[in-house]
Image 1: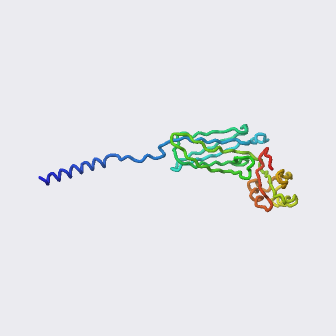
Image 2: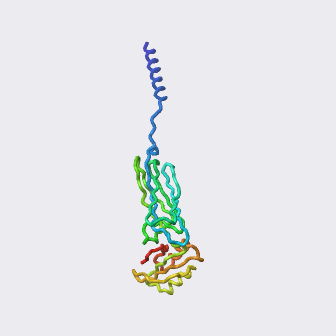
Image 3: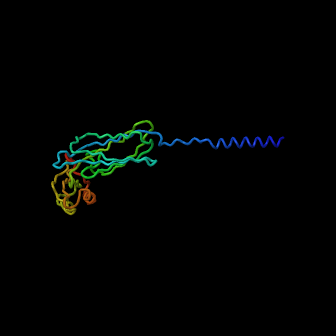
Length: 226
């Protein structure tokens, strides 16, 4: 009798175990199933719209999620764009979580937050941002500036004379367009043409490394250098 009871108990336990194993187990909900919205703002901060050529700036963007999701595209700023115009891109219902966003431009446009900071100009920028669930978050605006192709502004040390400054510019193969002095410290301030010696992108780091040079700037239209 006891043996039959034990066999019955074992059989019931086995049936229960089989039923439990056959049921679908709940899985952890991936963060990708939660959606959020991302706002990207590209600002035409200073467009060279009075140029004799028809200029348009193409800003390429790419965002990538930590899980592998990505989205990319191009925003065009055409020659009729007005200074300060903002182009807003809304990416709806994308996976919540951490993103890396990269932006690239090509000459004669640069990414720049302030026009008096042209020494920090760049052609590519990467930002990171977290997109929350069921909400919209905005990236810091990306400001696009136009500059004169094959032109640079060279700001020398105050103790450098014009003959020495001339020698540095000519040694780089560039042509002097205008000499003046900074109103800040009376240092030589040159506007030069790089045409024939290379692009402004190629010559900028070369001249920056020259002894006696404080900074080299892109020649942004309408910019007043100190």
